[in-house]
Picture 1 (cartoon, rainbow, N blue to C red):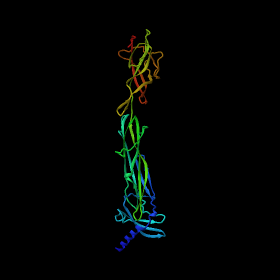
Picture 2 (picture 1 turned 180 degrees about the vertical axis):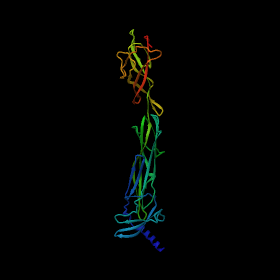
Picture 3 (picture 1 turned 90 degrees about the vertical axis):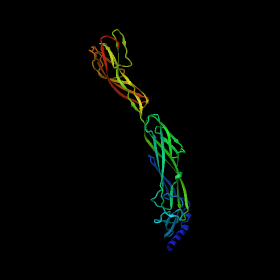
Picture 4 (picture 1 turned 90 degrees about the horizontal axis):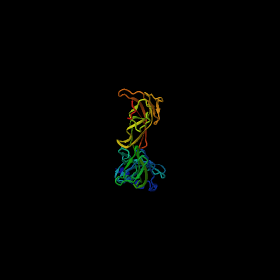
Length: 394
């Protein structure tokens, strides 16, 4: 019992006299280090006195007991740490720290396998993710933080939770537009805004500028803390990918048609129509110039998420002709031709009943949509020609 009392008295004396405060100089070697990733994760670490150290609250007291003097001016101590002053609850009663102190390098009792820090995560979303082009979306971001809390040693360091703040938000919407926002007092760690996307696929990136302070304190043997605050700042970003305002380019519905042109025996000229026909009448033995035409049943259009957002214009850029019965002396052979090249054709024999001569055509089409997109397609069909005896314009 007397021996325990003597040890306790020695500890109190050492707490008052060992390791003079001038050895600490009132300065703490503290630094912060941060790490970020493009997927919204970040970490701020606090480093003090060359070792990763652990956070703690205030009111801790360290009591040093001299263990041995192993060389001139080199002392080995046992160090116990108490919470709420030196008469409070011991935190390492069964595992005291061993500290070696010299005049040039006072030991602070640090465990190298402990750490202090703050982890961050930024969540970014765009709602709705898929919507018609030119519709408004909601772009939002939310920052969450977690602190590592532990105590191990006679030194403490941590990121001060109340110091963390977002100073600015930057939204790169992915379509060439970019905006910067100040924090909303009602949601200091969140961003909500709207944006109108045109057609296409986009990735929105939101960046939060985060600032704060790291705190560290050394405790002298008498429990006196030396404190220091160090500011830090970092950018944390995340993205919302695959924002869709897709456009479906609906092709036109086209029927193959043709328009005949020629001169009747009485000298009457039959001009070609701008609009073709799928069935025509033509006099027996009369030379014909047959022009390929496209009968646009339904023009192409732009569709985005079920909403029509634009139209189109379709033209014939050429055609392919498969020759059939042709009694013209300058008969056009099977082949591909330009859009304005006529087919020289003639029928000398009317068919019985309701039979008609087939003219097989494949049209080359070009559709230009309102947003400038161009699509090509083909349409195949047959124009039926009924040959009549009299030169009647029908």
